[in-house]
Image (cartoon, rainbow, N blue to C red; front, side, top):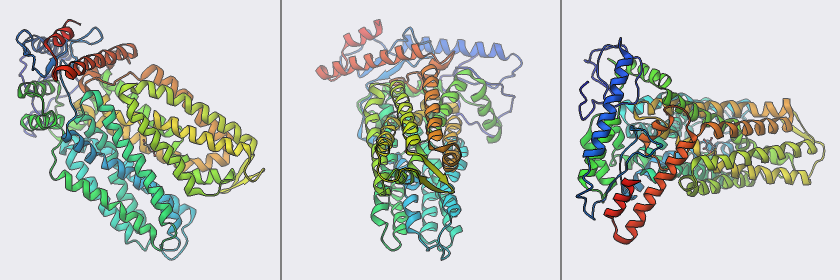
Length: 602
Ligand SMILES: O[C@H]1[C@H](O)[C@@H](O)[C@H](O)[C@@H](O)[C@H]1O
């Protein structure tokens, strides 16, 4: 099989001939050919991948003649890697351009947090402003759930749209949804206009929640990819906190809820304006075969890196970018879905990504966010906005701690610290609720020992402890989902995971009160504690350490198992290599020849 140095764009021309697609292996160039000898075809592909990699290992960089000023360093595959591992890496200093792109993309995180956060205060201050009557409990549920429903619907399509139209245009489209949704709400005098505005805003939230972390992970230098993606979560939890703060401040203001919704227009307009001048991700350009644009963006991202290395990196990304064939968009999407399910590495990625998002929702955090006021009132604490601010403030502060820990300590460790912590906190709450003796009659809570009791204090303290452990691990790590998937299935894979998140959020928010009524608060919290415990077991056996790995390296880890041990070894190795580079930079500003040789000899 002939392997051309650069692959065709992932989405082929309509004119191309269609052939049945039966899945692919790791590999690089997908050629149109009959699939009767599919096994042979896969073997050939693997062979050519090996040849390409070997060729690149030996020819792409002349170590003998490398000067002391070379900013490049090529890392030989280590024992834990196979020959599909990425081999070109270089000093990936974070530049102002990357910071700008990250901050602009993560405004979507803020919109996610603010738009899901403001509704609880808005519902209190709306009073009789809609249809001149007080909203019923059912009306309130519809207005709250409309955004999650919109997000669920749009997240199903957003991944494919991101591959077809690009990440940036999709984020700009989400801005349009935010603006239309907000205007409909601000001007609403009818309940259904308000609900429609919330639904349309939800379309924006769903798109942003998927694409912003994907965008960031595609532009981020590998050693701080975790951190940069957590910036999105920081904006998210910060958005929730600000929404509760503003909500508390505007509670008594006439039409305060319209101001609250109106404020959401500011960040979205800022994001849209910035994106008019910023590019898409280099990996997206590679996927579309626009290698010149990919180089341009990489050059702006890594200003200290030589053109030669940038060219090689783009070449490598192009080699690893595997196209999905199909004569039209529908067939290609179907083939991508097949590829996601039939390729073992992709399927494992899917289990992890959807599993983590489901755990994030089914351990009950959002029900506590939405109903913390009610819960705290039942244990004798009446200031519900203060409580919401304390709980969401804890969420924000511990997301900040996750920001520092996620690349240094690693994603796996913070999950394995967070989930057991949540289990214990939830179990203690379940016990404490038993001694308080609460019953739910309708939507009203009846407490046998009213007033502030010591068990009430235990509940308050351990709900805050739960919030801290949640934010440290499972609140943040699932949004690293994009790194699990290779380029050709990343869009659809992250769609599945994001849709799992929104479906879980809808289910839990709409069943929480029913659970409290039917299985008592003790039963509800014990249920969440049980889910947290099982989730710890799942993460222990299935979640490999991915910090410090190139996006393209993750597949080699997931190829023949979850490979926890190998992933930990590879992550450690990568960290040591970068530490060596950084160490040499302290003294000479560039890696020295010895450092290069040392790494090569490893
Ligand atoms: O990661 C976020 C964060 O933890 C939020 O606080 C929560 O409301 C979202 O559902 C979740 O996806």
